[in-house]
Image 1 (tube, rainbow, N blue to C red):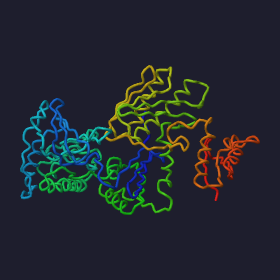
Image 2 (image 1 turned 90 degrees about the horizontal axis):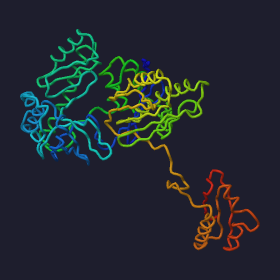
Image 3 (image 1 turned 90 degrees about the vertical axis):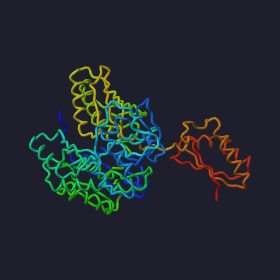
Image 4 (image 1 turned 135 degrees about the horizontal axis):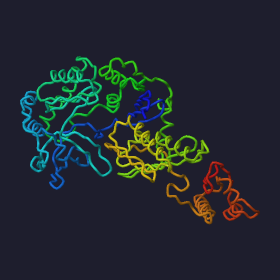
Length: 514
């Protein structure tokens, strides 16, 4: 079943310490990202000059120091076909070298063997150029590759590669041949490229301009490689804002709202480069109300990131996550649209599938996801739900695989994880138990209040105000010889009781009466 492509709005909120991005489809939040403005965060696509710390022959891999607290990991198969060319470039470049000439002179040589051993290629202390493919998650460091690529809107530039390949989604043979010939003619020696689907129908000027900007970005790192010769960042991929626009921008995009003029100009210039006809969709938000509140992003964040996610008419999801496994339980709640239980269950499961597809993108959940749908008796309903879920997940950029429902109503989904799951704490600490889950026993609450009162008397107090919940107030003041009466007589003090309806049952506050 084909799912209609909705319109999209990108909301960019620039704060003092971070930039927050919200991607909306028909005013519903489907992706949420945060990008820190302070320091460096080791993001996917960033390119580093790293140093080999330890070679692991048993794993055919190595640990690489890229300046993070946790060492990065590279497998032999991630070194790339022409690693030796990159290695030669790093070793021979120095401050006296014309690095552009050196880059073009280096011969690619023979590709690395598929069944090779990493100890024959890397040694401890060796410098290498590497790129993050998976961000550090939990106790694991970044996953990196030595096969560098610079992604643009229309082409992906491949240094030390002379092959030009075209996206399989471009079906026209004439167009494939035109693009391949064109890109081949504009790339200098030792550069290859992957032509993306977005390049279909683009004229030469756009592709030449993009290739030139990507080459300039790569060659700008030559000076750092030649002179510093130590671990550190060579260059970062585009910001998350421009990266999202690069991958998603199409005819369905209606607006890009930005609340900061500098970022607005940056995004507008980028859009004019990759898609000039859509420059007008970038708009500067100058309203007094907070931009996320204005488009109701804040409310959706608060309602979407909890353990329990509400859906239509009482149905809800329960989401539990561990490092490698995520479990989603579908509950019908009080929903009963029809008297036919099977049809009602099928409708709830379809609604749940829509919300699950959204939650996977919103939280960027990865690894193994097990969805416990409500049991359905009819095989055709199980098959239709599986097909419906596949259609809903087509818009997900992350690599994923969906298996049909088992006889127990479980659906297994694997989703490529390249960064940690987005988690937002939507709960507050209980003011009574302070997060411990335990409160003082009702049997001893009067003793605790009396101890606080005695301590106040020792500090020279004579008059006090005791704020309590109505229930606790009734307990402390009931009868002629109530607790309050005894305390006044025992400590010869003034004690006024105020009942606060917002207080929880055993909550109280004792203060001196001015």
